[in-house]
Length: 377
Ligand SMILES: Nc1ncnc2c1ncn2[C@@H]1O[C@H](COP(=O)(O)OP(=O)(O)OP(=O)(O)O)[C@@H](O)[C@H]1O
Ligand SMILES: [Mg+2]
Image (tube, rainbow, N blue to C red; front, side, top):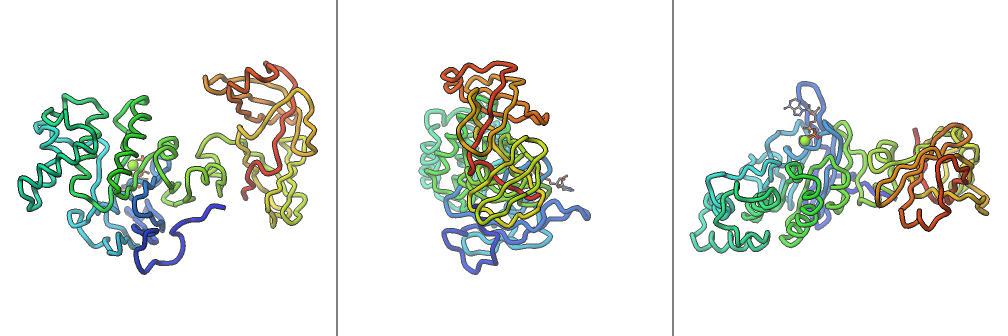
């Protein structure tokens, strides 16, 4: 089951588990609640992602952490210190902007040194620290170049080195891959994770890209309209969504609506007009008697066969209407006699070794009792 980390009561002290703790944080703009009682805690050294659609409040939350936005109410504690009253420059936090904001007239090493020069460090100390940072992001060889002589990925690494140079307790990234093209993105995601983990800094990042959040973050807060809908590891959010919103936001899903018919201890059945079969769910679930529910079934959990499977439950006949080829996998659209289309994923390895399905084939769809999640509507 997913635990909403940090959603519990106020924390008195900062431990490893609540190095950063945000309690009931709200932000109102002229009567509009952009952030509504957000609570979460972030562990030391964690990469924590705020994921949500446009306007869900991700940047607002990040800007409250940085101090660029003053929360209407709520508390923020970092490493045991209350920070919501501090101006941005007094917070031990650094924010890397989407545009990187590098100084075009300065070299790579001057850009990295910039923040350090405002401290009272000696020239030698600055040179040493800049060297360490360039080593960390593997840009020592390009130290004398200017930003416009660098690729997008290299510019991003300079910005990251500059953000980490002062050794902040918290690194904030708003859409860190926003300026990069698709191919470079996936490469930089892993590079960024490596650099952040090596530096040991605690990181909160904002993204609207679910794959990016899943690849980079140890945990994700899924946001919708200023609300935190769910907090969990990527696989918890994917496998155990606690709401329809969460199930539909991440990946694709078959959402089968119905009414709970049998409600036995640890076992329920759902009758749906979308399928000709009673849905059996049996993984320690109960207490849904008579309720309208949505059964969320991921396409990769459904299997198809031309032969009737010998399992007693969760099988229904259908016709293959569409096959979408995605290279690594294919998605079958299988229409049930009730007219509802189920999505079925096949890895292409499976596909070629399989029975050779094609359009208009009549097939059996089937899944196990513990596949899928029951959600209240
Ligand atoms: N300064 C402001 N004044 C008024 N409304 C604002 C202000 N800043 C943000 N908002 C509103 O608050 C809501 C949340 O905005 P926010 O920038 O946090 O969204 P987001 O999740 O970062 O979206 P995106 O993915 O598009 O960047 C939006 O509806 C936005 O219009
Ligand atoms: Mg934003």
